[in-house]
Length: 185
Ligand SMILES: Cc1cc2nc3c(=O)[nH]c(=O)nc-3n(C[C@H](O)[C@H](O)[C@H](O)COP(=O)(O)O)c2cc1C
Image (cartoon, rainbow, N blue to C red; front, side, top):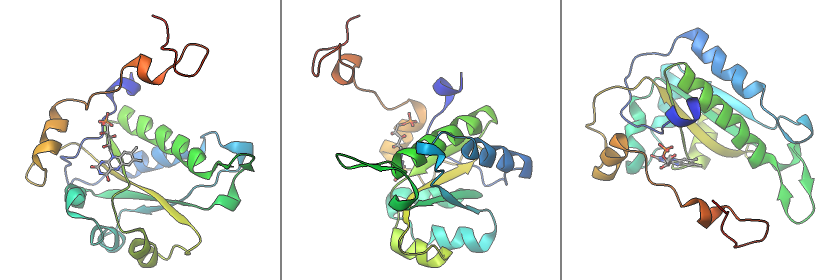
């Protein structure tokens, strides 16, 4: 099951991703649900040397592992392109998250890693890729085949390669009918 198999692995191979697989991931995002079908995501597919370099030069040390990636999706969106409802419910990030989730599961089915990151300089990358300033650079999806070169990984990242980082207990996050009541087994 893709939901279980999907992992945010970091030891990527530099081997390019086939055109059909890129198209399949684009389609997975395109078909995603969004508030009122607004589809607020705008996505730059960076697979050529120039656009990849424009992104990779603006990654912090903690994400240097991503420089091995042959394919990066830069997901941008702005609040006015999606539902804005009462009590601060701006849905553009939510809709983008759903679409990225679909892409990640499709990537897993295709034998690929699709690892979303938030650690990057959004202003400099937006400038380098020509993304208008009013858009938020919501995430970069670092994509590629799994490799076996761990040289760019920290100790903590090496551990996460071996084992999925732990999740909160069900009862800490899921409640039975009332806020704070742990879900019954
Ligand atoms: C919004 C978001 C931002 C993330 N940012 C980073 C990041 O900057 N660098 C990184 O190495 N991983 C990043 N991750 C990956 C998470 O660390 C990873 O999904 C989490 O540790 C759980 O591991 P798993 O996805 O393999 O189950 C991010 C994930 C999400 C959803």
